[in-house]
Amino acid sequence: MVYLIGFLVGFGSHVADLARGGIHAYAGFPQVPFQVFFVGLVVLDPLVVVMVGLMRREGIRLAGAVMVVDVCANWWGNRHWLRDDPGQLLGLLPLTLFGVFVIASWLPLRRAVANALTGPSHERNAVAP
Image 1 (cartoon, rainbow, N blue to C red):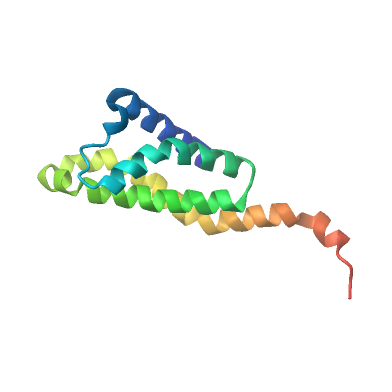
Image 2: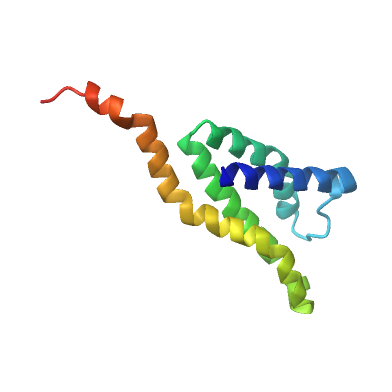
């Protein structure tokens, strides 16, 4: 549930940014790949929600990759603001904490989903050698 809520909040945030600033909502980031990535989160975030909601291991993998890139891009893209005004760290705190949660829970969640998909019924149906 935390994954679903976090990625839905991210989706809403990026939709709001695009509604305010259009396709150039992230022009404050001088790196064009970051701008493209942040706009792309309007597709990636709900894709993660659907895939994780359907208990797909690929969704958990995608969630980890999205969060690693998202946190790194935000810290790198905002580094000059953080240097000039360390108070800006508070703005990155929720994203960073969620990113740490996703990465810390990535492997256990992936295992839990794999076990749920193969579960006890799979073991009962297995033929003994």
